Image (tube, rainbow, N blue to C red; front, side):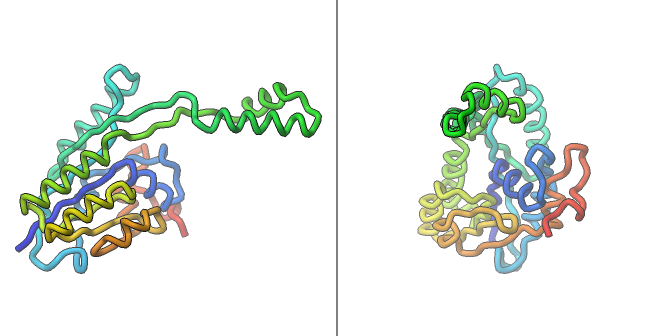
Length: 233
């Protein structure tokens, strides 16, 4: 009998899963228990008969303790950590108050105004009354934590198979390393979600998370499962 582990990039699951369900990321929140249930129920070819789920590692970015959302986010992560079968691993969540695209977009608007004979400042001002610039968030250290855990478990022999719910190319070398150790790597992603070509090619098995399971994994902010009417056709 072999054992396997799940490695879940929560940011990827929410972003890719919401897109697959035709929803926005701010409309859903992950249901960790449903993710564990899905992983535990994987069948061939993802795992062999008799294999058992050892545990699931849950990766996410965390706000700095000085951030206004730190306390509420910590309660959320603490609740996930209490989910049976999950270990939470947190990187950092960096916030950029002024989006990178704001400067080039404003420059393009000014150039357009000049071409049209319109006052540039007036056009920019009018545009920004109809557009809200939201802070950009980026995870830092999450891929590093996932890589370390993946390789460590592969070296120890604790896990014969790794099931990765992620799509980033940065994990390609970690996948190669654990495969060289004789371990299998399964890549799991929502339907039509981005998975780096190199990662897709390296995977021993690629599986799709169907809309029914996605609807359980990503509940609405009110705590309800996503209904079929919200799903992509």
